[in-house]
Length: 137
Image (cartoon, rainbow, N blue to C red; front, side, top):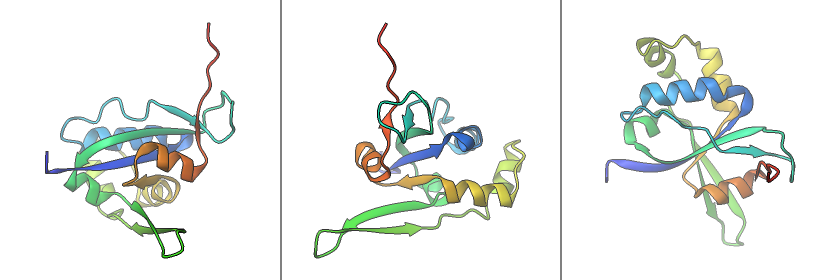
């Protein structure tokens, strides 16, 4: 298991399908079933704004993705640093996997997603997201 790293992905609804397709294509285990949990920016809302997937991924896949790391400064304030990932490599890899995309789409996707090494609920709190509330039957 040492060849895996934890990542928490938060993907806006608009980008879910592309992100899911790319993750499924690039993951050695297939990545199928990612981005199922539904989140919203409005507490108590049933309107889905984001999807989340969290867990171990390969170092190779992690290297492709931007990644936010959150640390604390001496005053206890959060300091976020972002590794850019390798967006230039993704269109070529996607084409090899049978996915049609462009560098422009990948750049927009990377600008809208939040990938971090934080535990899921810490990342959700940082982003102000709550699970979608579904009425009980």
